[in-house]
Amino acid sequence: MESFFKLHVIPPPRPLDWGSPRGLLRDTLVNHLIQDPAPIGHFYIEIKTQSPKSQGGRHVLTGMSRTNRNRSSLGVIRDQVGLGTFFYDFPGALDDARDAYSKLQWAKTRGRLKTICVPISGDRGGILDEELHFWMKFGSFHHYGGGHRILNGEGSGCAEFGVHFLNLALGKEASPSAWVRSVFAPRNLVGGARTGARVSMIRVFLEGRSWAHNEDSGILYSTPDMELAWKWLESRAPGQTMFVLSPEDFTESRGPARRIGFCSGYPEETEENLHELWRRVSVV
Image (cartoon, rainbow, N blue to C red; front, side, top):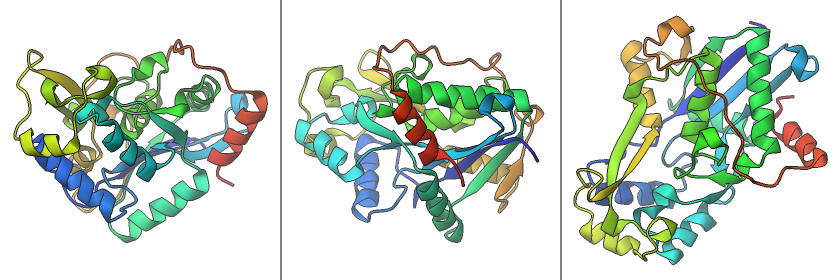
């Protein structure tokens, strides 16, 4: 297979309790405290292309992450953003290919890895290659979190990042709706820039017995979810870890895949920095 796109899916170490803010906070904190490498799960993307646009072909392996998970977690606790962490602008970075490979091997040995492989043409590979280049050039990779509009180039979490490139590989907006997790975060528990309030995590635990029902009392948080993606794949073929899929295997379609319009206004990276970024995400 000369050119392909892969989406590597790692679920959290155990199912997260999305039944209430309290349950989600408890499980997330436990997974952070045990220092699990993927406490809420993770998506990695892998692109191999022979496209002339990529100067003879490239092979990259990366994903979106926070630059320092422990420090940033302490930061949101200190700043008392409560459920505003859903919409927080964390310092972001693209995963190093060598580190990503190690994490994938770790997940594989623990039975926590499923991979979607989509064969692509050289031209489609060139589009993916160019999109990743612009993601780096226009500074989107510096911004991690769920409050960003990815199609404006503002940044994203690992889930939105992975699904965007999956859709681009498929050539259509076809990621399953069954992958999407949506909740209304109660407004009184959302702090930080979104509301200007200060909300401690203790308050979230004490008062977060249920999600809000609608936009009158809550703020919508919606994201692709690694655990749901895992369940969708498991339902197709229990126990299978590699899925070679074509666009026809994804029956949902919301139109052609949309490219990112990089209009966030972030500072552009220098050519020297771009060269270093490509070196870090490249498989050698």
